[in-house]
Image (cartoon, rainbow, N blue to C red; front, side):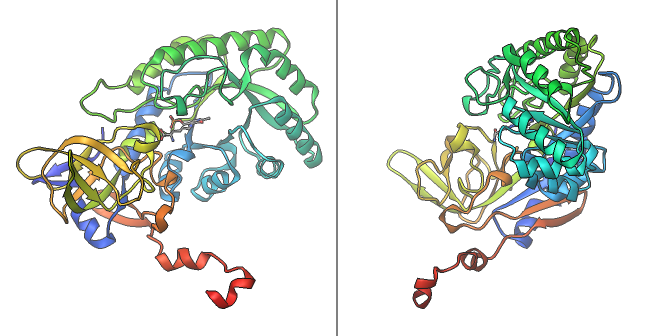
Amino acid sequence: MDHFDYRDGVLHAEDVPLPDLAEAVGTPFYCYSTATIERHFRVFSEALAGVGVEPPLIAYAVKANPNKSVIATLAALGAGADVVSIGELRRAMAGGVPADRIVFSGVGKTREELTEALSLGIFQFNLESEPEAEMLSEVAVALGKTAPVSFRVNPDVDAGTHRKISTGKAENKFGVPISRALDAYALAARLPGLDPLGVAVHIGSQLTQLGPMEAAFARVGELIAELRAAGHDIRRADLGGGLGIPYDRSKAVPPLPSAYGEMVARVTRDWGVRLTFEPGRLIVGNAGVLVSRVIRVKQGETSSFIIVDAAMNDLIRPTLYEAWHDILAVEPREGRIAATIVGPVCETGDTFAEDRPISPVDAGDLIAFMTAGAYGATMASTYNSRPLVPEVVVSKEKWAIVRPRPPVESMIDADLLAPWLADKG
Ligand code: LLP
């Protein structure tokens, strides 16, 4: 459920008409709904309220949408953060997440990143390999600290999602193979400065079935028992993120958080651990739209093209994952046409949708790419020297620009001329 609705034929974000924002901010722009973010966090938290031995840590996966206002909205509700770089860690703290609610994930944490995170006293490191454990041990000894660690195990489960966002198969780069986990924990227990207190798993993103998650969690449950039998004091389990959201309103709805919560409660009933979750998309996906203006409509040989001022550099998901985003006219007209919706970037991949039914639109009309709050702005680039898209947050009738559009000059001035070209610039 989201708070983007038509009122009197005009698409609104909460109480704000999107054309008003387009007028004030220019297009394209991302718009996030505070009420939707808050609602999704609450629904997810409530669905998991009773699992584990103490209230779970809901560590929002910052990568989905790292805007400081988004993080601050969630931090105010008690969210922790799942981060994968020191940049995300600093952002999470700048948004008000305390260090002791931060989980550091990721397959390639550097010594510098491990050092800073350990100095700050984060909740947990999710280690992805034995050499990473060895490096963190060295860092911990140097700092005179003990690092709380889990190994992210790779359960070799097919998550049934797009191959580029599937992470729990044996051939994926993520985690320690579950078959080697006992050895990895034995190593961590021997290494000074590490407290191997948990197990972590995350098998992929945009998961639309509970079965693969349940299979992965069941393997984690077995591993916890084996680890305890081997003398490890396992007190935590991190079940990752990944629960999918509806992108295509005409298709079946992925399992609701309540169904996920029931499955987790059933599978983890006897684990005797505190649980952590790392939802990203589920919290912010439906809370954002990308608003764009039609530049012109052009008739091709076989299709009618709607050329809009957003492009693949602003929202890469359709071309990268063949992802579907509903595309709505902000002020729909009578009737229906089928058109191919494209951006101005010089690549055929700069196509948002092919032969998509849509209300007839003309140059100057506004359209909205729905469900763009997760992995939207954060994956944007400046390809074709297009400035990063501004971000706006709405709360009821209030709105604020929370990331302004940079002037093109600032992008050009960011380059430095090599000294031997100084007289050429
Ligand atoms: N935890 C870990 C360790 C992760 O790698 C991820 C996402 C999450 C949590 C959050 O997963 P979520 O709840 O958002 O599914 N750019 C892609 C998605 C990449 C997901 C990467 N990892 C997309 O646009 O679909």
